[in-house]
Image (cartoon, rainbow, N blue to C red):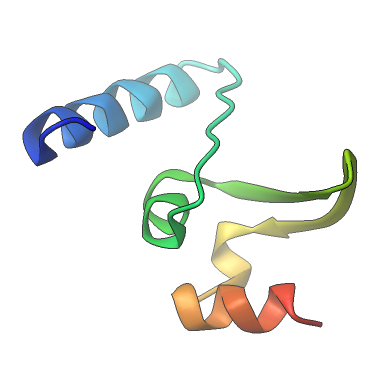
Length: 70
């Protein structure tokens, strides 16, 4: 684990890279992190993409869980 300050610095670096046109792959089991960092969310199950969502389509963690359970 890393401290909260370092975590937010990493998030900022990821955003800068994405704004510069680079693709960034972010993997996390923490839904709050996923919601904070991503523009687009791909859901994988058994090595296959089972869903694709834009951040703007999902309001919060509860919305994400609802979409994933469909």
